[in-house]
Amino acid sequence: MKSVEKLVETLCVIVTVVFFLAVVVMVAGQAVAVLTLNGSLAVSLSDLIAAPASSVAAIATVLAMILGYIRGQMSS
Image (tube, rainbow, N blue to C red):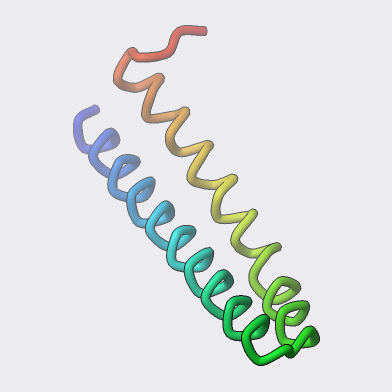
């Protein structure tokens, strides 16, 4: 059971880091778009990154909930 817990924890950390990196890229890109007055770039970045980042966040949430149940921090 400890190996499953470690695997879920590792996956949760990796997915969370990927989510934060995606958000950093999106915010930095939109800041550049605002500074260069390029509205189409801001919209393109949002369209490109928002849906995958939301999916990654959902996966991280599910993994965190599973990890909470494994560790006994949550009860059904």
